[in-house]
Length: 236
Image (tube, rainbow, N blue to C red; front, side, top):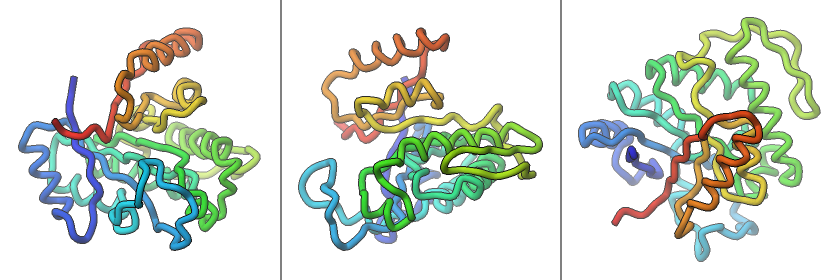
């Protein structure tokens, strides 16, 4: 078992670079940063954690900028998004950002992804919350094509582009591990369909049954054991 650190990097918290160096010096495996470009002031979508939305959600730094800074100051620390809101990003640009971070860090990226929960935030990015899971899958498939093909193209309902060149490719082959976040009804199927690992929030008292279910689905699909990284677990 390996341990990492998850934190919202904000303008009033410890500098991400200092945090990264400290986390690495203490022997942790990884550092994860979340993503929210903004929080709509209407606050119509209820906070999944219950209660009032903590202020760090509207104050967090861009994860790729923050992780890039950490990459320049560390050597071994794995750099994760927990999670990247792919449904709010352009896939061609995002593929470039992930590959660039993997290049700068010499292959230390863990690409945690998800569909998000704030419907108004998605809508502000032009995303229909009702179609976000199909959109997410297409964007991930398109990014995989960009990362692994010399001349990539993708033609789907939401993502459509003719052959393109984009370099450099990620250091990790075929691409950085894609960790699918969430713990909903269809999450494990998504992990098996287009993920390399599962990244649930540590709210369950017992994950064994869900991990068993994940391994069963993986076996049915002809895959081996899929890694699980539980994040957001309160320190004890």
